[in-house]
Structures are given as structure tokens and as C-alpha cells.
Length: 258
Ligand code: ZN
Ligand code: FE
Image 1 (tube, rainbow, N blue to C red):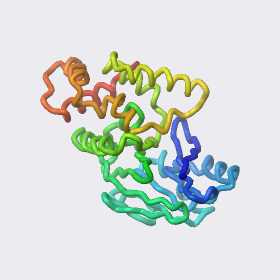
Image 2 (cartoon, helix red, strand yellow):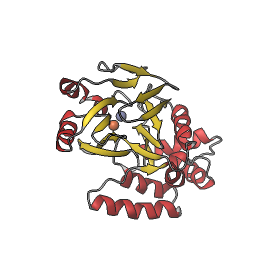
Image 3 (cartoon, rainbow, N blue to C red):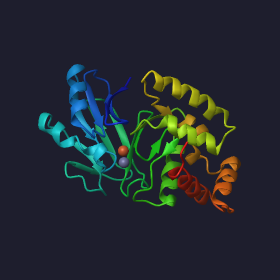
Image 4 (spheres, rainbow, N blue to C red):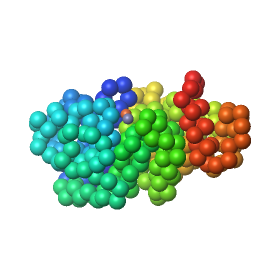
């Protein structure tokens, strides 16, 4: 019943517009820039009912204040981060109800990229900001590898069919790295072809699904022997836990030039 539109901002940010039961009402996810959002709302004659923020970075919250100048709507976001425009501060296990959309979301604390990052799960959709990207994950700016590994494990445990809406279009570059880690992963190879094709037509590769991410995302695959072997080779030592494998793959990606 619901569907999700988007506006593009900056180089590669997606601002998701979640449409529920009434076709002209939407919730806005991570509006880093007001301009493209206001233009999309006007062009498609949509009325926003709420703003959902995942974390404090400017490319996700920078447009909130200007949207509030036009629409007086609630702003949900992480309790543990400093975002001055929030009206509702959320933490793990909280639920938000958007009656105009007939949708409900559960909040997950997913620290790693930032210390208080949250994600929204509901109606077989996941809005995960910069914690997970398709075939990748966010950089560890404020959190530890252990926190990020735990956060991604929570995503991996969601139902396979869950649609994954990330904050950025990084899929193609992420798959180049994924294929450096697992050159023989047929799902990553096939997805790379598909992603390149979509991007050459300027179409989004997203949403992904949890099922696909489990098969291709090296950051969800620390338990796979092939990922471990590649990470150990890169690190030049034996890695004893999945967290260590994850941390080594994350470091590898930080300096990867593919
Ligand atoms: Zn970010
Ligand atoms: Fe971002």
C-alpha cells in the first residue's frame, strides 16, 4: 500500500518521501537540503506530515529548519544527538505512529557512524541513514567497530524481504570493493552489472533488500570463511573474532582505491 518517493540532494544523498494510505501525504526522511524537498512536494502536490532524522550530520538535517518555515510538522530524531530542530527525541524500542499515513515505525539504536544514530523499521521497510549502504556501511566517525558490527547484525536479523532505504547512492563503488573482498561471489558480480546499468541511466539502485545485503554486503559477512581469509590477508595476521574481521574489512575499505 505504501510507496516511497525520493528527492536527490548534494552529490549522492537521497531524501526519502514515504507515502502511506493517502496518496498526497508523506513523511520526509533525512532532509539535508530543503530546496529539492520543497520542489518535489510542490510538483507532486504532496503535504508532509512529519520529518524523520537518523543522525546529526548536516547532509541529513540541514534542510529541516527551512522546511519548518513552510510546514509546521513534528520532527523525530535521535535522543542522544544534538539536533536543535527535533520535537520528538527517540531511543531504542520507541514506536512512532503516523496516523495520516497509517504507518508505524520502531526505532533501533544503531551507533557506529555516529554515537546516537537511529534507524526506523516498519511496514517491511528500513530507513538506515548512514549506518548501512547497499553493499557497504558508514564510516566509523564516532563509534567503535564493535558497535557498528552489532548495529549491522540487527539489520541482518530483519526479514529478508525488508526494503532497505539508505542515505546515499554508493552502491556501485561499494560493489567494486565487495568484489575485491569476495571476487567469486556470484551475487555481487550480478548486482554490480545491474547497478552499473541503473546508474548509467541515472536511476537509483535503491531500495535494496535485507536478503540481498546478506548475500553481497561484506560488512554483514564477517562470518563467511572467504571474507575472513581476505581480511586476514589484508591485515597480515590471524583474526580471531567476527568483530576483528569486520574491523579489518572496514579499515581496508577506508583506504581502498578501486
Ligand atoms: Zn552521516
Ligand atoms: Fe550522509
